[in-house]
Length: 275
Ligand code: HPA
Image (cartoon, helix red, strand yellow):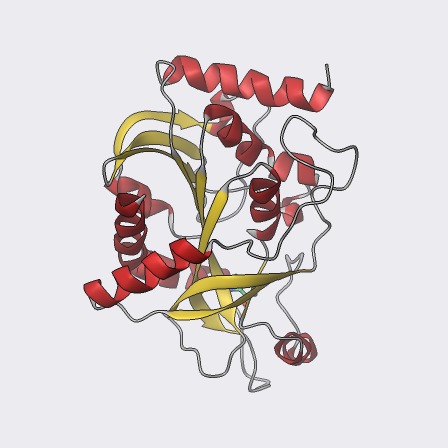
């Protein structure tokens, strides 16, 4: 048996024992500062990552490191309270292992969230952005022998972010009176923030927001045949105006994300209800 599949299945078997063999339909990845969204889940199991075979340690700030399984908006969901990043030093296989695990548990739709820097000069701190597309400047997590158990060698990424789910998100935001933006998320490795020249470059190539995560999970989810919906909280404006006094700070990112978590939860819940 493929060693990689063995590792995934060990995690799957352990999680199944903790959730009485139930099948979560929806997966959620909660990014920096967004972990409190999990409080809205009627939890049936809260599983620390340290208990799950082959899960990495969550070392990033604002990432609690629990897998929460429970009901949200009438569906059984499986939520990651914190994710793994390439900048933490993990190979892509470990960064994306939880998404493979979710696929094996039966998850059909993945919601991804993150804190991101605003590149689009019309954005403001605190904005929510529906991710319509992405630009990947991280290594592709599908490099290596193809995981035939999950999907084909070449994964189509034309509609990586599901059009129907985006439509539902727009509808929900309008109904709830929540302003949302839409745009392209660019993933770069980090952990250093972007220089002004990099921000100008990313703006030129079509990015609206920049972060250090999410895209590996989305690629693996698409390879595994899941539908994907993604949302960013603009926690800081990247130094588009090129001010030398501008400083990016990790704690600001967490505080802004925390403030937006409630709005994001209401949009996620409305979409989940529509599934
Ligand atoms: N750059 C990269 N990642 C981020 C940022 C940023 O400005 N803000 C939150 N995550």
